[in-house]
Length: 268
Image 1: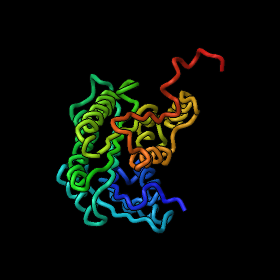
Image 2: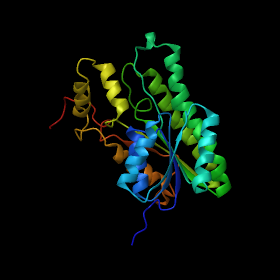
Image 3: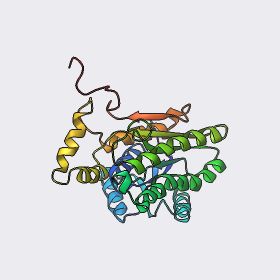
Image 4: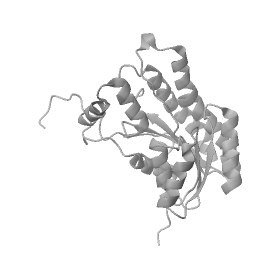
């Protein structure tokens, strides 16, 4: 019998109450990981119960915490270790996106993105790295985006800036900890059907948000948005020993959306 790729691994997953975080947690449970699901929302408990129904043998604890608060993330890491032992994998998934014209974007909205998208990942990494060093290694998977580093849309200045920053953080941490057996990689997602994307669609087209989502799919060569569990599969691979020689990588998962030069020229 083949052993599940994450059997016995201890993982902490941020932003785990819904969307991508829920998808990542589902896949990690499927592959046998012991997981701590962290989210600011109390819905994280409901999501954990849902995953336990899918995988009755799943070992899950939940923590309500704000990734922007370093002390709360240190406490979340300690809860994970107390429940399961040393942390093997950190999935830094929590993130936010709010749209506004650049000249009208208030400092509070800019800082909200910085606090969650950059400081949240920073805090999570600083909370788990000491345990990984003590345990002889580990893996960190950071949720960046194609937005900012590869493409961007109007109104996404804060989101694009913060997600691009995570590519730099990924590469620096990968170099810094390579000789101490901590691998650091990032995903670069296009669009998945998540509550965050649905909110962005509502901000983009208040009268018909579903039309905005359909228009996203039109621009994707695969003609659909990603499923959260498909992103979870990437996080599982990068967190597993199967990716033992991969560090500092930016892995695009976008259904080919960043490939077309135009939407009107070609033979199809």
